[in-house]
Length: 295
Image (cartoon, rainbow, N blue to C red; front, side, top):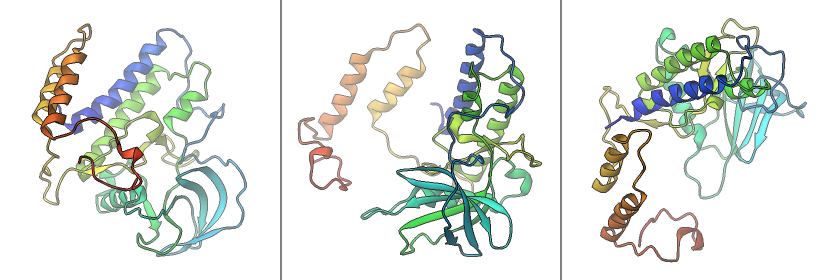
């Protein structure tokens, strides 16, 4: 059985392999982290300014942060470029609070970065530094986290070019940097669970770490090692699901998938759990916040 750690490393190599496979159709050569063209969109950690922000400030545990520019915004909240009252320019991620919601993605981001802060500097070269954050149970309408201001994501850098592919030199450099970044997270005891080019960013332009690749966005990360470094007990899987995974791992590229058998395996589990697979479904119920998954 392939572990979750192994799957995350494989995912990094997957998008590098796709990158170089695409390259067979082109002879375009791209310089390492060139910024001659701007990307068509910005990610949450992009240092470029999207618009001038109105005067707004956030009080953290150690200092106050004044918004000097907007970076990105969406239904989740926003990301701002801020200046600290003690000096320095950083990125502030804002997440809106919601009624009947007991967990926020920024809480996990704080956990990961707090764990990184306790590690040796050489063990967290690919993780941003936690500067400050709001209290998780504050009465404020939003919670926020302040961290190192970084540069563009690998996804945005690719989209800045017509062919949207890296040169082999850049692709393999990014692969090594990304693998090192994932290793640092795993060594801290966390699985990232959202490996993709958009979640790997380079350092701020002109900084000493401009060519360092960082892994970011830990909102759906999960702890898999305890304080002693031992594996936490994984969530229980139905035996049929384990059979399906074993079956899929044994297939070759040209093999056809037996969808009927997989479907029947899921039906077998549903029957054992007394699920009739008929209406009403969760989205049809009035209490949309219910955690009940079967009746």
